[in-house]
Length: 87
Image (tube, rainbow, N blue to C red; front, top):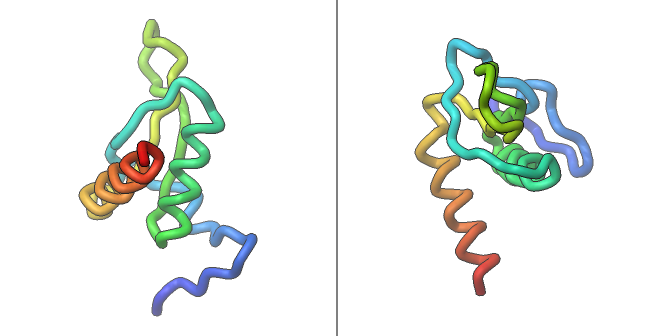
């Protein structure tokens, strides 16, 4: 059964990605950038989660994770969004 997206609401299943299923697809220095990217992916039906990598000594950048099965589409959407920003 497909997800029913309600404007202004994000279904719980789009907010978290299981650690066993996730892959990091991008890094951001600012939280607002990471959340905007995650929000765009969620609006397209892709579960996305942001957070800091759990590796001591790394800079405090934010990672963007999606399900491995969604990674190619998520990267494509992020690339398209970046191209649109450049125009």
